[in-house]
Image (cartoon, rainbow, N blue to C red; front, side, top):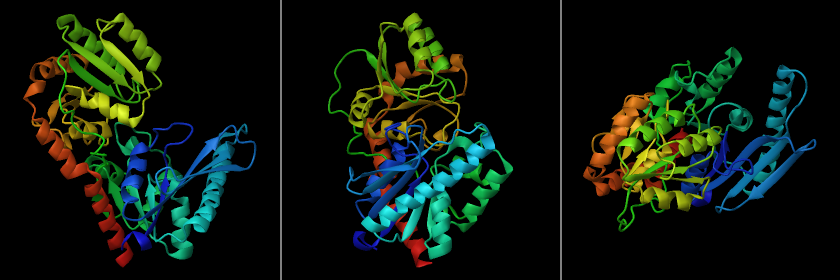
Length: 390
């Protein structure tokens, strides 16, 4: 099918909105990529304490396709189970409100693409039952992993299992995540489709200015799961031994104040820059100027930042956890034992010594060949066509 006759409706659990313009931006990147060859529509639902009864709808065509953000009033009754039940019903109604507007503007979808199983799949289940519209699920959620351990509840698991059996397949961003999903008794036809990177935006700088070695850290700044307390401790110890490096911190998070207070007490007090939440072009600019990227999470299903670093020709220093070792080898970075400030300190010292030994062009080529829009788009289009032919 070509663009003129393939309508794909995205139903994401996370998506950039007024609450967080970066939440689920990796799903937005998938939508942008696919919109170049088919008609994409997005229905995203979120609770909102500011909604005074009823529902509010925001429609955007910022990226050249229809995005519907529907907000419903968050239940505030005295009983948790009652709030959950009413919230469930309001979520379902909000999706139907969005779908009605989608039908008016775009028309009937050929396929639904659910991003993260759960309530976001309610509309897909309904359309599959009533109109025989097939749906695909893409999983990004780390909650399935044993390291996270937050995927709990008998009825919740049964619903996820039921939805999976009705789907036409599940894609996961890594084999590690696929195994985690499967470990909960969730059965379907599995495929591995990585996250997508805008390799036109994320690319190496033509010429790097002389100066101190630059380390980049990009994350939602938290002790769990991003281990920023261990990162600060390790960097402080390295800073007592070497003064030839500086660190760029990008992001916001629950432990942001902790991070800044600890940095100001550390040996890095005069050698770090905190950028906070910045637009993607600035992220790309800062990352491209880095000599290496540092991330030390407790778990990662894949890590978009890792892929963006490769696209910029920047090697990575990361823990040997989750989906990370599926892509990091001696040509692309250094893997460390997890959750140890001492091991991280040793790794930083090693990378400060050898970061120039990595081939930027090989890093870049790996990203283009595996994670570029063209590569990921073609994988999804192939899956869509296989599903529709059935």
